[in-house]
Length: 134
Image (cartoon, rainbow, N blue to C red):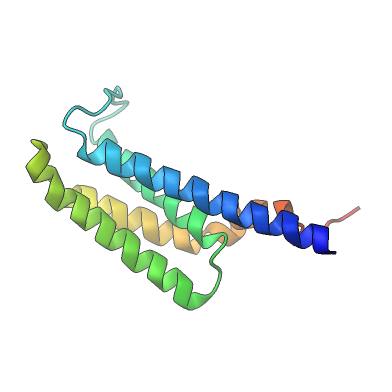
């Protein structure tokens, strides 16, 4: 039993560390003066990138922070992060766009509403909390 708790604790810590690394990648990608050139698959593809990044971030953290208050904090922090990045982009020589922030917010909302169906179950399974069926 103690070993199971230790494994779950290491998983929780590792999950948070990977989430923080993803946050760092998003901050870097949005604030670097010369971001990596990703070919656009369709017009407005950058909005999809914003949406998807925030969807994954929100779902990632919601998988381990399951209480309503924790999820509200995640929502607020990611919305503030997206808005802050758009404001700071002006100082890096890049264009800030309100539609990028709207995509960030939309991804965050869906990511928080959806984790129980995907990343939350993955985390629960890895932590040994997911009921196993024969």
